[in-house]
Length: 119
Ligand code: AMP
Image 1 (cartoon, rainbow, N blue to C red):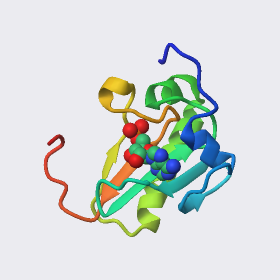
Image 2: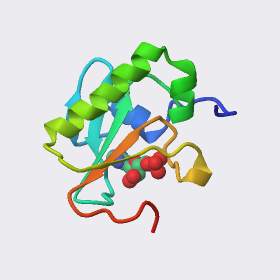
Image 3: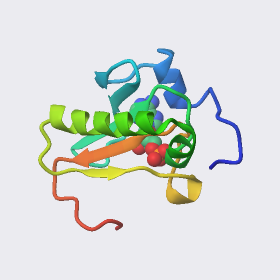
Image 4: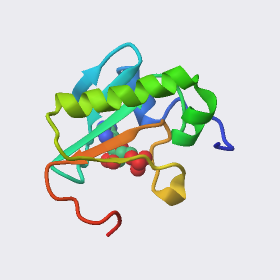
């Protein structure tokens, strides 16, 4: 888990509060999916729970198992809604893993052959 507290001023918290705009792909009571502002593939969508968790590790450690399961079902729903037959999921936990926004999110990447896991 993360050693520092959740920062309510991170960019996704601001998007969730409607303080800054985003291109919405899917939303329900618990989940928001938006287009990534700096896409790494033709399809690059970010799926996040609305509740405040810093990362994958915090979410799985702190949320109720049913909420964890429901979240990942929502990720699948978003991929299905996008009509994706092939896609990659990424979730970075911690800055060394590449996390830059400290509100848990899963990247859905697709739309071209994605090649190996890391360049
Ligand atoms: P990560 O580096 O795994 O924390 O992913 C954060 C992602 O958020 C990056 O791919 C950024 O391009 C994306 N991002 C940052 N700011 C915004 C924003 N305002 N709207 C949409 N995506 C954003």
